[in-house]
Image (cartoon, rainbow, N blue to C red; front, side, top):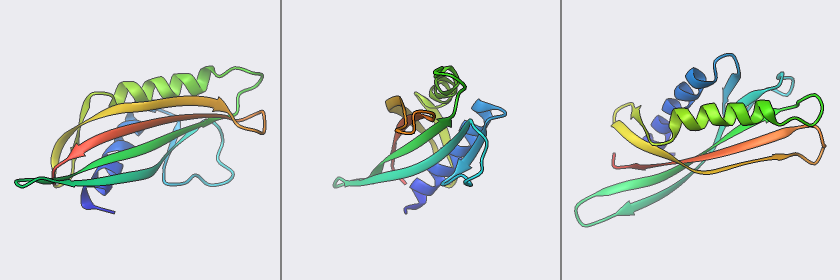
Length: 131
């Protein structure tokens, strides 16, 4: 993992925690007995790029929202996805040691897991970073 991707992970976790208030946010993985709803800032994809004058990385970071609503309502999962999107899309996050970088939401999806009870939302953000 590059320093830039780690800095993006830390800045994203902090921004998401601020945005979602009382909803628990985990960096990497939630404990098995975590109460719903909760958020996991998870997987990264890094694509290095170089030019003659510069080097950098395109970093994608996936954020998961998990909820187990009573009945068939997806409302809470969608509300949390909206808070995260609002906090991250077209925003500048300050990456420690690198400075502010713009991020944008490039993908959002929500669905019911095969257990028929758990709602799963995904947001993928992208940052273009020149360390």
